[in-house]
Image (tube, rainbow, N blue to C red; front, side, top):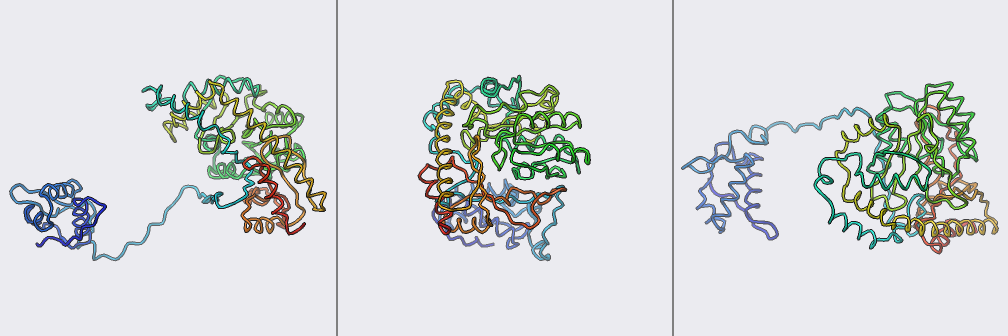
Length: 486
């Protein structure tokens, strides 16, 4: 046979271009099995390249299985090809795509590129510009200098002891939560999925707040849960409605965001917490407490977690560093009783042998030096000023005649605003102006077995986050949202 024509191009090694050309010819059937290739001398002369370049290319093709090297005979196309697309297969009818039989349908979750917006009122987005990058860089450098083989090997899949020690110390001091062990996760979403996987069988009932955190619901539903809406009022989840549903159905889990209810920002009063706890104990229901932004509370000290007073061991406590640092840090953690933790650790090891050890070591060092708590104090002060400013801006709009109503939240990173109009249309108009916020319909779950979403479909609330922008940016953005009504 004659050597194949190759138009060599810059930017890629010549031996790789030779490999690509001959591999493609074999795959398409242009070179058939048992075809003898020209000698190395002929090929190198034809392509005007060094003999070593040709030898390297041919040896690569042999290693991949396309050619066979025969002593004193040279190279031939292999009889048994790694991908049999030679003449016999190239003549076949095009194969049809396989239909996949997934065990559980999972809806693709759309992601919004926030960088395209000029004004961002995302409810859980921290101010990344204020993160102490240089200080944390020092902790990363320390982690790189001090890591050892044990930290880097397949060990401590439940989290590095040095980080767990720092978090446990912090939880005891800042949240009155006394614990002796934790499970470190790749963000709170992994923690939610682990709990769902551990406890939910197909068809099990999970009680949820009517308006709630969509990714949590998706985790439960992906594991087979039947979701049951529980009514809410101005103080949070309604105890009477929860009791009614507990009597009607064998509910296995209750998911709560009691400190700053997501998305309405309401803090669940102590009296209701106690009633909910007693009901769940009575009916054998585990409580998943998602304490996602505990630190940012402005009216007073935040209420201690339900997990801090859990004599029956029915609370699974989940929290995260995403609101303190950033979502990209991928650090969450979970506390529960020893049997529950042991089971979840086993599941965690099946999913992920090892967390990001460098990040864990760096955060542990960051906490140990006190920089973590100093950062928290700075951000709490900053967010409190933005919380006050947003309250003033919204009240100013009301004074100008806009029909708005809201309750100033005790803490968190967002306001829940009743606009008394179709906010879906308002949201679309705002996005055309480069403004991002979320509206009420995004927080209902349409597939709940008992859905309390309004039948008429009209929704009137929006969620305005205040943490990620300056006071000035937020004020301009809010006025732009309602500019057509002023």
